[in-house]
Image (cartoon, rainbow, N blue to C red):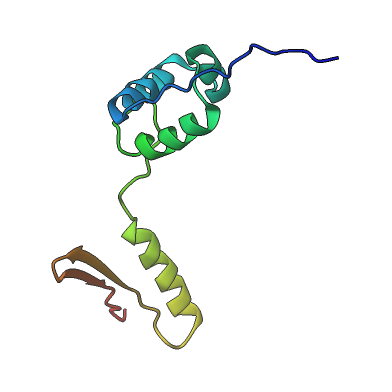
Length: 114
């Protein structure tokens, strides 16, 4: 018994970067899960996740989590002072920020005996 299938696979729509940017912005505004958003918009889940990962860090999106660009040097200082009190040698730290084009910013802790 042969059954003929006339079902053609759905043609995948190619989207450019700006179309993906609009979709990612819409996703962040509507509150749906990634899977549900893909179903409602006819998107491939794997492609959506790839573009979401790529663009979420580049786009300014409402409600997107961002990592603070600041480091609390005071926390490093208090950790070093605690270590200095418990050992005979003074603890120290050095931070070097490489800014590009050979420019470096060096931060050093100076231990002043009390």
